[in-house]
Image (cartoon, rainbow, N blue to C red; front, top):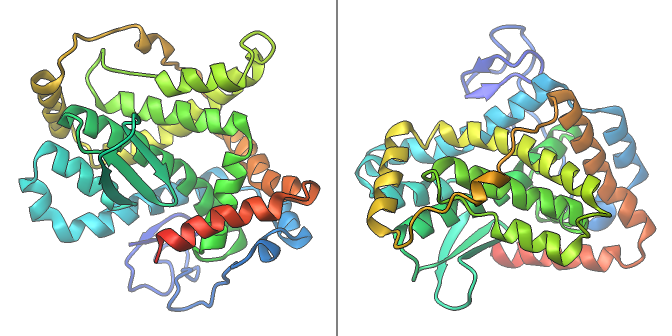
Length: 317
């Protein structure tokens, strides 16, 4: 299915014109969309101007979220019978695979990691920890994916290693956005695992390592609020796949595998504080522009950008 970029109507992928408003549907087979393939093609005054002049509307943002949801549907629809017969862990892994590559590691203290469209999980973990870690790392991917899809929509370009590097550069160079991303991942993870097993450890570690609780209280609050706002969007995406039945299956896995009693301290870090949609989109719009602004001011930005880009090129071989 394709969503009209004018009215938001869901259309058959075979349609050329929207069945609701007759607007031409923006699909690769009918349009030659652009592709940004280098730092110099992205970091331009023209691209910054286009960003400045084209903030996303609520409807356009909703279309982007629907299209991200559709990416998983396109992958899982062909595997519907296999999905039903998979174990609970197998279902969550298939969901993660619909968006990113997944592999297992056998060394290191970290449960898992995400970088360059690749999720890595320690296979020595119990199933319950693998499930929660997969959801956590998938959220990092979807956090990046939302910003990337926003750029693709505004600039009318397709995915590329350079564009993905720009998003990672923009979100990774600012400690506040790194913190927001981490809070988002913990919040989404916490939604799909049983009450009492939530863990904001890496979020707390980032605060200790990079911030002063008193001096930076306002920006920490901003990061929490932004991360929570985007977490709500990602939760809605994942709830379309992680049904109530699967959530009950996850509870059963935790009952069987988890060797520690529930700890309710971390649940206190959950928050209902979110930005309104308008506020959220305004902040995300500024973030999208910030990468170009930072790159224009920092002489080392091109080299930093190339490190990110090389990671995507290497990972996509």
